[in-house]
Length: 229
Image 1 (cartoon, rainbow, N blue to C red):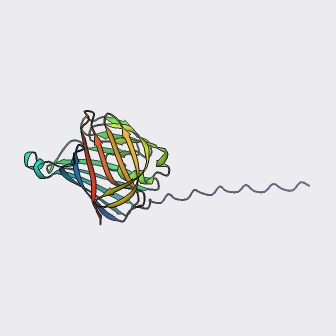
Image 2 (tube, rainbow, N blue to C red; image 1 turned 180 degrees about the vertical axis):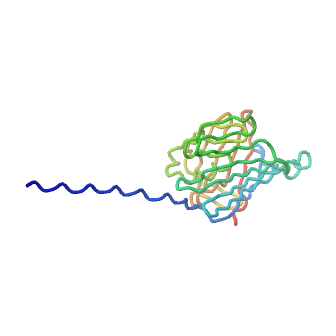
Image 3 (cartoon, one colour; image 1 turned 30 degrees about the vertical axis):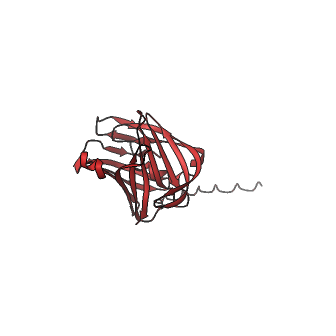
């Protein structure tokens, strides 16, 4: 008699998806000085702060005028990103903006169940994919990408629009800043303006220099002066 066929084996259930682990300390900050143009004229100060707790994250980016610029036009802008920390990195839920202490309508709300982000400014909704970020969180999501040196693409929401960013690598560079000397990866993303970031390879890919050049050719540069907790 033929041997009985073995009973089919039950397919094991996939492991539960755990919350991601932060690549950075539970809290910290970077202080920057802000220069206008290539002449090294200081116009402001900036600060990035982060907090990770129980699978959630909070990022705060504050920029304010200083020196003569503050005398002529005092401005303080606060951008806050909140969301979840997943195995794929940061998953933003809300971007909010304050200007001189007052709320603005330049906010973005992410609905991951519906795969949409809604911009408060005009109520528009945009389809999002895994890995989509906001204008604050993308600086720190780059550190979760395994092959950033080969380039990367991600959707990014600002308070005004949502678009796909293509990050291209300009290679490694040694960078001297008031916060120290760093071995960095220089990445660029060009939309209607140009943003460049220098990410510290030996410091969890923290941004230690950020340069933004608008479509008129005017540039502002943030250079790290202190990395701390």
